[in-house]
Structures are given as structure tokens and as C-alpha cells.
Image (cartoon, rainbow, N blue to C red; front, top):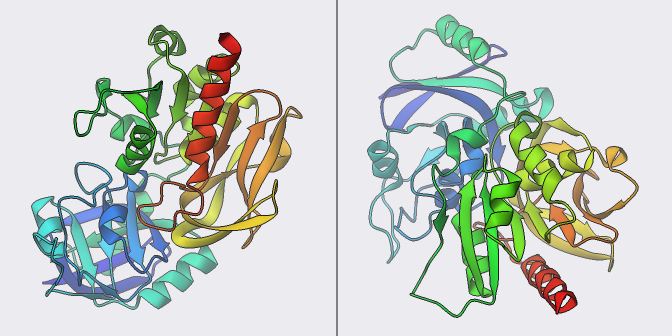
Length: 366
């Protein structure tokens, strides 16, 4: 079926639909990963976004029930150069197109994704509409222009869990640490990483007040990834502000940005963001370079951080701040994704650093 992708700047692309029929709108962005489309589709950080894959051939290994980062696809729409209707992988249970259709997600293929990526790179991420029902260019561009901007949007409240729950797997019971994980859009592999290191993880809603977290008596608090504008999540910023200095804190992605705002820093919207599995990040403490997975459209202004915090990581492509920590307290965070899924595992040590921070506090308390 014929489909169109219309951008708010007036550019219109014509292709073919795959997945569900219908119409969807969101901020159109691009991801440079060659594989991992299933993890990307199910990452809650992509809520409200139409994701364009720069790698041209997508869908050739199908979909399996294991490589998911949440219970369903979270993207607003999906754009590829060429969709592979035929898939081959021993774990696959269905095609990408069937998966999108089953979950009512609209996709478009057969468009020039290189041109689309250049437009986003040059003009910045912008709103767009994919439609199989309305094929009038002027109408679609008007809809794209009218769609709300990502700036100012609190999407954590859309993807967060409605009630607290414990992450469990394989009936494990010999836990060494209790961790409360704020769910701003948490990826499952983060929970796996904590669980594998002996953490009994209780996942809580984004809006849970700090005093309720402290009642759970955790050894540490984790701040998750998530979508939207960090400055709009005022309730989370206030809760984290109250937790600083009371418990070890580790934040990733949106959690990193919320921690910065809670500390008194500022965030800003990037032109087109970082989304991919091959970003070089420099670890300033030991002068090493890590190849890392990214998904963020906002960043922290390094000059806004208070003097009791120090920068730990920077992106070597554009010098964007990618990590900082408190100089004396067990409080640290990174903008990128050490849990990968998809991506390399160069930064896996950060989970070990969180474990060490909790252990050190326990030792001091004895």
C-alpha cells in the first residue's frame, strides 16, 4: 500500500507501507545502528518519535520474543530504505512487518533514507507524519507542523510503570543489595545487569516521592533512561534533589539529565541528537576511549554544573557531556547506555561502580 512521510519543513517522501495501516505523528530522528532494530523499537526512550534507520536493509533476521527492552514497540513510527519480507534466524518467531502490524505501528519503506538523514542532520530533528490514509502533501505537512514539539513534553509519565514491582528472574533469592529503580522508561537490560550483580530491584513509578523511596530502605537508587524533555519532569527532579547525599545514586540517559537538573544544572535540546551503537566516548579519569550506545536528543550544559561535581566522560564526535559525578558523594551518571542492547559492552564497568558505591556505604555504616 502506498504511504507518505511528510516533514514539518515541507519535504514529502513517497514509499510503501509495512506494518499497520493508518497515520502517525512524532519527532523524526535517525539511528545509525546496523543491527538491533528490535531493541530500538521497544526502547521506551523512543516514545513520541518516528525512527529512521540509516542502515538500508532492515528486517532480515525477523523478531524473537527475547530481544525486547519493554513489553511492546514504543516508537511512533518506523522508516527504512528496504524492508526484508523474508527473514532467517533460528530464534525468530515472526517477521518485522507482522510484529508492527500486530502492535498497530505504522512503517514506511522504499524512501531515500540518506536524503532524509541529511535533512535531519542539516535542519535538525523535526515533527513528521506517516500516513497510508491521507496522501495529500499539503494536508500532511500541516499536520506535522501542528504536532506538539518535543521540547516541554513530559513523556516519562506516559511510559512509566503504574505500580511498583520487583524484577525477578530464575527464582533467585540470594541478593546482596536492595535497589530502587525509578522508571522513567526503563530498559529491561538495565534490570538484568543489576539483577546479575546481586541486586534485588524494586521498580517504582517516576512520580514516587523521595520519602516513599526512603521507606523502602534501599542500598542505592537508580535513575533510568526515558523519553521527552527532562526539564518537564519537575516531580522527578525534586525527588532526586531530596535523595542526593542520602543514598548512592546511579543515573543513565534521562536519569543523567534529571540528576543534573536536581543538582542545579541545566539541559538543552540538541540539533539532532545522538542515536546509534558506535559513538566514541572518552573516559577522562583514565584517558581511555569506549565505543558506546546512544539515544538522546537532550544534553547537559557542562558549564551549568555546580563546583562540587566533575565531568567524567565526553563524546569525541562533538564534545557533548556524557558523564559526571559528585566529588565526594557516591552520586554519578552517564548520558549514554552502558547496558547496550543494542551495542558494545565497553562501559559495563559502570554497573560494577554502582555496586562498589553501595558496598562502600554499607562498610562505613558497620
